[in-house]
Length: 260
Image (cartoon, rainbow, N blue to C red; front, side, top):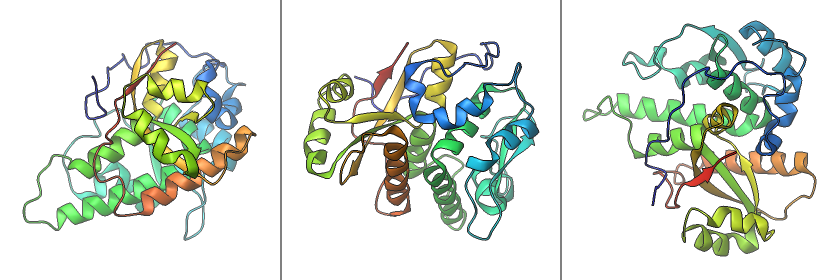
C-alpha cells in the first residue's frame, strides 16, 4: 500500500507537446475556469502572456495589488540558500510566482492558482512561516520537516474529498480502508472529488498514472453547481492551512491512483 509520504512517479518534463485543449480529461473540471482562458493559444504562452490571461483570477494580496507570474530560469527549487531565494518566500513576501517558460509543471501550477486562489496563497504563507521558524532553530537542517512534507504533498499531489460535516467522520474511516475508497465514495455520492495538486494535472497531460495525497474537506452542505463547490472547498482548505494545529504531517490515508 502506497501512502502519501511515498514519492510520486515522475514524468519527463514537457514530454507532451502543447495542445490548446490540454484540459480535455474530465478530471480537469476543478480548474476549467483557469485552463479555459488558455484555449486560444496555439503554442505555450510566454510567462507574460500567461500572467495576462489569468490576471483576473489571480488573488489580491492583503497589502494591495495581485499575485503575479514572473519569468524564472530553469533550475532546481531544492537548492540551499538564504530565505530570500526560496520559492515560497518569494511568493508570499513579494507576490511573485516564479514560472519557467514553456513548462507544463509551472503552467499547471498557474492554472491551479487561478482556480483555488485562497488555498494556494495560504500554502506559500505557511511555508514561509515554517522556513522562518526553522531558520531561527539551532537544530535546523536543509531537509524538509514533516509539516513541510505535508504541505508539499498537498500542493503537488493533493486531491480533495469534499463531503458534508455530517459525513466527515464516516468518509475519513472509509478513506483509511484503501486507495480505491476515494472513487467508491464519489460513485456513491458521499464525496465530490476535486484535484488540487498541479503535479497530478501534469501527469494527466502526459498520460501517466499519479499517486495523489487524499485530503477530506468538510462543508456544511455540498453545492450542486461546480463553481460554488470549488469556491467553498477553496475557502475550507484555506482555513485548514491557517490552522497551525492542522496539516502537521502527511495524511494517514493511502494514496489514490489517478489515471487516464
